[in-house]
Length: 398
Ligand SMILES: *Cc1c(COP(=O)(O)O)cnc(C)c1O
Image (cartoon, rainbow, N blue to C red):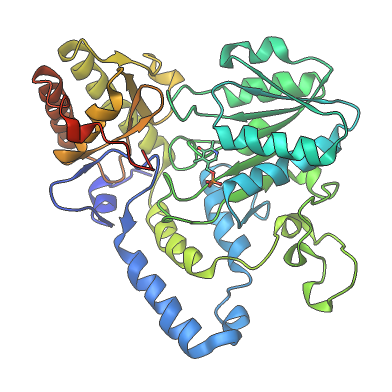
């Protein structure tokens, strides 16, 4: 397949004059999403009311739509389900993985992981109170830290700050050789880079759908459990919709069939309507084309900035093969620089302490967007435009 990026760009609403380099944090609005949500509100919620659970397919949506996400990450059909937020899915996956290696007490992660993943692990360890320990090492030291005390290796494939990418296949293989179960957080991978869960022999994977997949703010997370593990997975969050027979209203829990058991409670129907519209865009996209285009754009941005703005340090790996789909620079005044950029219509974001991030998302970006963004950034740096009080006021969300 050859992806028609002009056609995909036409499917998004982007405010006039804005260059949106923040699709790694919140993807833009697919034009069809508003009508799709409206239809769900008016025709289904409004007119069909409770019958929509059956007649409009609301109850089947968390698995049906999840399979469309699964197709982008190399999951077997029927092994991915949507619901809740990614933080919740971290907890579910970790609780399940811990039980597959009951004699081992170390959960290994890295210092580049997104904090909520580590926080959820801490919380789970505390409530289990079975002597588990969360160990974090530098991303490059993971291989050396795989030993027979480690039960679970829990990593985010692409670092949210620097875009550094782990070799999922090699690390999964190395982990398995030591009897370790793997959990891959694909928050910055799904819709960003080609992922092949089956090819990597991955055990568990989780991710969100509001970043690269463009499902909208609050869109549900996904969880994948490999076929070899699903029947021995005991859900820690044993909610009624993960029960074998939710409408039998039994007094005791029995896990549902296959991936259904990873459901918890009522699915977010309106959010799934928006995600459904976003997934329609992905149907005509080949992830390798996205990867190639992202690589080309990233190289342009990096070479422009590193040659013209010597004050900005590249924080991402220089080798594109080691990067996900974002390019980051560091600067002590990173926050103010990002605010000055936003004031000129270039939307990136800032991550403490000093990272300026740009998501390179070919579905709606063009090469001229990239060169224009580089021009504006270099102009801001050369003129110290960022050095004004209004750019230094911190908002709650950076
Ligand atoms: C974005 C992100 C999250 C966010 O979790 P939510 O529960 O959806 O807020 C978690 N983990 C990683 C690695 C992320 O990049």
